[in-house]
View 1 (tube, rainbow, N blue to C red):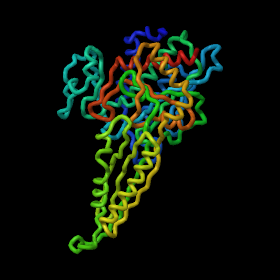
View 2 (cartoon, rainbow, N blue to C red):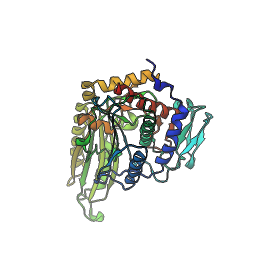
View 3 (tube, one colour):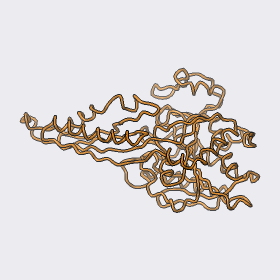
Length: 419
């Protein structure tokens, strides 16, 4: 069934999307997984306050910025639709710390000519290496200048939600029930919605906008664990070390070398999980590794946790007098089972894409979203594409036409849930 949303002109949505996105990415909202406080960085407050003020300026009367930097905005239902279940849309404020997100200088290419784009530092966006980029010839893209990441993860999602809100408020003829708009801090830290005010949320279902190329929708993600591995050495003057010294730094290096290279992020894709060494630090007396474990199956996570303990014993045997302590904790879980148990959220999403004429495909998230944790909390939350590519890198870029398509999906979902 063709939807009236399909007929919305891209130019109209671009006017709502592009200035917002170009503004949002200039906010320095890089989060820090080493900081336990929420939010983990002060810059996230700056964007949160700006979004609160923007929502109020659009005429949204119920907007709350919580003490932990969550924004919750509510749009009341249209007349006669007061008893329809509320639906929510969620995106995260922070950007990853893998590459600097400070002083982002977004570059808008209105009519991409299909050629290689030179960036700073000798980097380049090369359509010969990226079929997705080559397909944008003649369309608009936005990319980083190469000094920083771009921040499409997840400011593209924020811009798409905000543009949909403005469009909806300007077109009261679109039917809708109660709506909730949620923006969250610290998604990139893997904390999993700490301090999230679940008791305030009224939505029966929610959707994150935190995905990649057009048409990709996601209902399953990794089970995610973190392991902190501590090494305690046995120290003596290195001139008298024979038979006595247990070098904690060398223990950590030996441990890291035993992590299976065939089960690393760079060696796996699809449904294959991995170990990822995130940090290594230390000296003769003490050292530390931070390791991320990812697997789509719980059994796979247990196997990896057991392997870390086995490696610890092996290193201790190689370094008499040294000690290895493994401390592991969960970060988030695969949302597939709970979404499968409440299929309406996904079915409405598929219908929305069908109605707009977008060919959809289900894809596993090789990571997680705040929707993973929200699903675990009882609100099924599938993930929707945003049009971004090369997240967490200096080569990050986003397709403006695909941002428009994501915005149409949000508007169509609002219409479908409002029927």
